[in-house]
Amino acid sequence: MSPASAASWMPGDLEAIRIALGITATRPAVEAINRAMLQLELDYPDAIATARGLLDQIGLLDARLLTLTPEDHQGWNEQERKGPLPGSSAASGIAPASQVDVVHYATELLQVEERLVSQRPLSQADALSRQREGLCDQLLLILPALRPWSRDTNGGLPAYTTTLLRG
Image 1 (cartoon, helix red, strand yellow):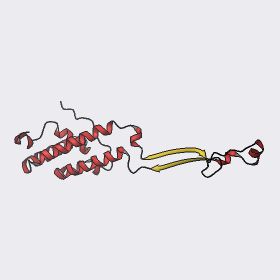
Image 2 (image 1 turned 180 degrees about the vertical axis):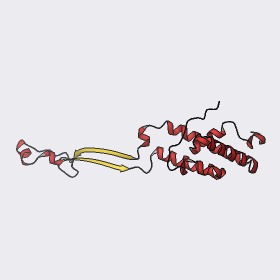
Image 3 (image 1 turned 90 degrees about the vertical axis):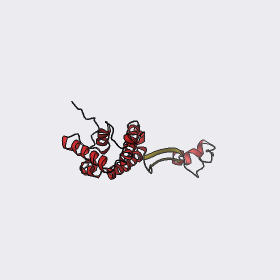
Image 4 (image 1 turned 90 degrees about the horizontal axis):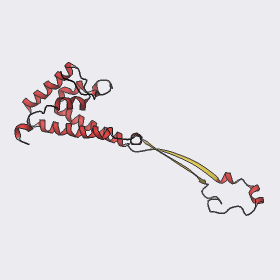
C-alpha cells in the first residue's frame, strides 16, 4: 500500500461507514458522513488507514454474525436427566429379590427426573455483537461528528443494512 493510498478514502468507504454505524440512508445523513470523511482527510490523513482497518474488521464480524445458527444465539443451556435416585438401592444395582418385595415399595419412587437450565456466560452472537460494538466505538472516536447519526443515539431504531443506490 502506497502512502498516497493510505491517506485517502476508497470508493466504498462511505457505504461501509453508513452500514457499520447503522446510519439511515437519507440525504442529510450521507452528507454528514461525507463531511466527516473530508474533515478527517484534511485534518488527520494518517487516521484513514486505521478507520479503513476498523471497517474491514466490522465487515468480517457482520459476515460471521450472518452465518450463526439459532443455537449460537441462545444464551442458556438445558440438560435433562432421568434415572435412579442417587443413593437408592436402584442406583447401586440392587433390585428387589421377589415380587413380594416389589409390592412393599414402588420402584418408580426410586427414579428421579431432573431438568437443569443454566445461563451461559455469553452466547457466540452476543460475544460477536459486543466485539462489533467496541469496533464501532473506536470508529466513532476517529469520526466523532457521526455520533449523533449512529444507531446508538437513534433511540434504539434498527440498523439499516441495505446498500444505498445511486443513480
